[in-house]
Amino acid sequence: MKYGKLGTSELKVSRICMGCMGFGDAGSGQHSWTVGESISREIIKKGLALGINFFDTAIAYQNGTSEQYLGRALRDFAKRDEVMIATKFLPRTPEEIDRGITGQQHIEKLLDRSLKNLGMDYVDLYIYHMWDYGTPLYDIMEGLHRVVKAGKVRYIGISNCYAYQLAKANALAEKEGFTKFVSVQGHYNLIFREEEREMAKLCAEDQIAMTPYSPLAGGRLSKLPGETSKRLQEDEYARLKYDAAAEQDGVIIRRAAQLAEKRGVSMTEIALAWLLAKGTFPVVGTTKQSHIEGAAKAVDLVLSGEELAFLEKPYVPHPLVGVMAQNTPDTAKEKHVCYVFIKREFPTYLLLKSEFVFLDYSESKILFYLDYLALMGLCIFLAHYGGKLLSAVRRKRGR
Image (cartoon, rainbow, N blue to C red; front, side, top):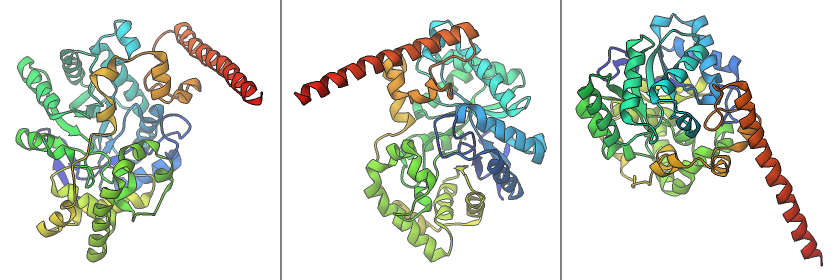
């Protein structure tokens, strides 16, 4: 394994970061394809043996169970000062805003919850998961600075933002004497290169590390067209990101396959070697030991300038997808119950399996269950009158 300093920080991290979104209780959260704790532990143990010391998770991953699995495994298999842990926090909910919970309070609350999940006293990198359009930037930067000064966080990073937002945040931090962001985690891979427009240039100039997520495009860059997997079949969110451009992306994927065959390596190694050549620290998600083994091999693969050009030439600009397309100033203001139910996977709320957006698990039990009963009441109301409407339509057709 090869290592490097993460931006301007003192963190010496493996060039491959193990992404832990694939770890967690599959029945608790956004994804159905995640793996349980025993498999997660074996993958983490294998990653450590391969020299990986950089792990990325988030409180939003499977309702905190990803953090829990990672924390327990690392306590058993590694010394705390030999691994670098990154986790993330979400924006304030509309309910928190209504209740007057400040950005600073929100950050401290979620960090304490993450530290409890991880079973740790501090994290090495605390990442602002997506831009919070409902909270003043000053509050965010001051809140992050406070937790750094308190010793709960060593460095801070940001994810899912525009280059101007990162520049604005670090300029404010410099002006006010706050901690600055040392890394950015954006959507960047061989078939989605929009980060190269401005973000990559800003990071190179300001020595901000890039830790791209989805480096294999949800598995698409590790398999030939037509091959499948449990994630490819069940990851609806990734399909929303990639299916619309599948035809044009397929040209690049086939080139990656051709080059892999020529070099006698896997497609995974080709896709990651391309990102490593850009100076990044790819966050590689994994649900099998073989995945992390292939990722680790990529650090020793050097692509020539000709090979890089061969992979890059067919690329055409893509519209923004995923979080960057969905998280906007307008959507941040929407807090109507029906909007939340439709857009934010309401079954997970009904079953109390997710705290991703709507319910506030930190409020008193009485208020929490009043909220829950109100949501259940809405569903009963909709089901009752929806059933009546369907019955009326059927009777009308039967006449």
